[in-house]
Picture 1 (cartoon, rainbow, N blue to C red):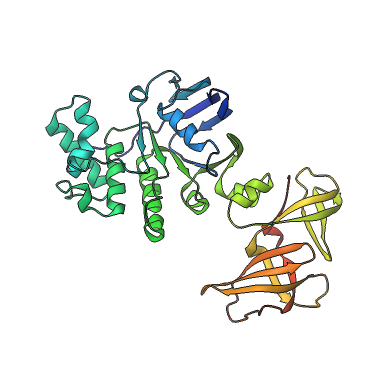
Picture 2: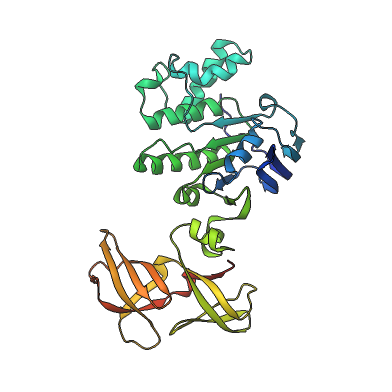
Length: 356
């Protein structure tokens, strides 16, 4: 049987790095993944996130640093001795085996009696909502069901850490949303420690306790989804975490921890975040842009260059003195036309000063 709660272990990396000859696949990093939490490794292709996942799994050996799981030094241990399970992007199910035999495979391979292994496999299938489907072949299941079989096969081993390598990339958009919620609910119910690799920002925002954004084989920033979205520490993190406009402004003065920022004719007060007066990088979220009538006092003048009706909202590209802005407007009944002059105001909650 699958326990009501599994033992989610802490994962600790101390200056862990990976080198292939002269190529630094992962620069030495320090990272603590708390037990029972879901941590997402997010970043573009080649940033080092899959290398980091494989180092935790034991599929690669670190060339420097030390790695601990549940307080135990596993740096030199092979994958089979780390008590971790991994769900691959391809699911890696055996096509000639039944679903039940696929889930029980790891237990049988480790020497457990087939009858006992099947009993635990049935329990794992029930945990992921596939009770009664053990007799089918993987080819007789939908993509989402095959994904659940892969998760059940990992869960049946009762791992301390469960690893996901882009698990939803083969599914369509609607099924991806459904499966990511199921994975999150399962992780919380079982108390699992999960490390989850993806390049999909919305997926990371939806499921994570902590997001680790990676770039150029190192950590660019780590924090909660809300921290990374509202307080990015660089232009890269800001623009990678969802839609964002990157423009240049001028910090005209700083007082009481607040910066007076000029964006052409528009003035806005923002937290200065340690920046000095002078030219500054500013990130503006599309939902923070308020489109108003042209000619109002204190607004940024703009002209609608493109307009797209999206059903629940409208999207606009606006030509302004500080550059083109992408805006999302919920007011479906007030449609702006290309070429129309307008004004722009900004909600401070969606505007942030960042480092280059």
